[in-house]
Image (tube, rainbow, N blue to C red; front, top):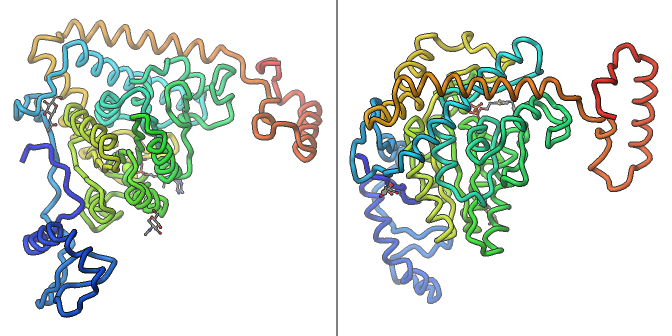
Length: 437
Ligand SMILES: Cc1ncc(C[n+]2csc(CCOP(=O)(O)OP(=O)(O)O)c2C)c(N)n1
Ligand SMILES: *[C@@H]1O[C@H](CO)[C@@H](O)[C@H](O)[C@H]1NC(C)=O
Ligand SMILES: *[C@@H]1O[C@H](CO)[C@@H](O)[C@H](O)[C@H]1NC(C)=O
Ligand SMILES: [Mg+2]
């Protein structure tokens, strides 16, 4: 099945579906009946559900349909499967997708290596998930508000966050928009409508529901998108965010990157249902599963979800199936819990970047020469930004104490004085000339 199909909030066994259809048709009538409270009509009157009575004892099967299908537009060789689904993006747009996906990849390699060399404290790569970032970011309006987890740097890059800002954040230098107060990869940009990343999992999910509710009340044709991993979906906050946005009818796209792992925990130990998409109907949300390694499928699904979320004021759930090719972070060694063969399969045979490249090559839009010169040029651009970031001074340490209270409070001032006493006493360990004054 290739059609872009959002599963309705109700999907169930054939019998159940029939009952549900009847219930929908009759729901208006049921409401009327509830007001008359006529027990002679053999219909349920419970306020908590609109349904029929049955006289057969039957438990609902957990896998109500056998595996929610995965929507895709391209096969692994980059061929369009069904021409009606081809987004027919211009050559210029497709080249931009490709350049953003590969630039992200190059930036990841350099920052990962610089952590390994002890130049930055921490890093998280996006390897293998480039299609989910670029496909979804391209389908949004620049004014739409983004709530991310920590593995969506491509979304920010697509919006135009400069390499210098990525590097400044990871180096915590004086140009960092966050003034060097966060761990690497916790980006944020007010100008680009990208809310600053929080480490505690699922923080962004109820926040996005609240923001989407505010956006709806402003009536400004804006949507909110909330990215999260399948692991973060296990947090209680995911439940609160899903339910509130459904009941309050908010223009919100829940975008789950199902990359197979929550650090070392594989999906088959995380849940027994059919992934994250299967949870949508329980909340009354339109839901879809897409091939996250097919940038066009991600684009189409996000575009349609975005359009309808705003037009109809309701949340959508997209589960993008993909694979985390890199280690979870620089604090992880994934060879302890998965095989090299498994990783190689995704890296060599089912990669979003090579799939898009096949597509471009088949159209004569991209040659070996183009690839070589782009690789060289993009690496040079990243290296230059990296060198600039490394040379830059660190932020003034005084900034540790600002921006929370409008005026310095006594307890904070005490800490500030004690910090400076300590720094003076152990001068040799604090190279203050590397910091801005
Ligand atoms: C509340 C909370 N618990 C645990 C952690 C530690 N932790 C950081 S990332 C992570 C796994 C998240 O997996 P997933 O949501 O699938 O995202 P992925 O890393 O696969 O992109 C865990 C357990 C945390 N940051 N916050
Ligand atoms: C995918 O995108 C193209 C172009 O935007 C559109 O023509 C096609 O109908 C889309 N598919 C669906 C099902 O929305
Ligand atoms: C769902 O959200 C509504 C508010 O819109 C709230 O009253 C209700 O308690 C929530 N239910 C659950 C199960 O979270
Ligand atoms: Mg994951």
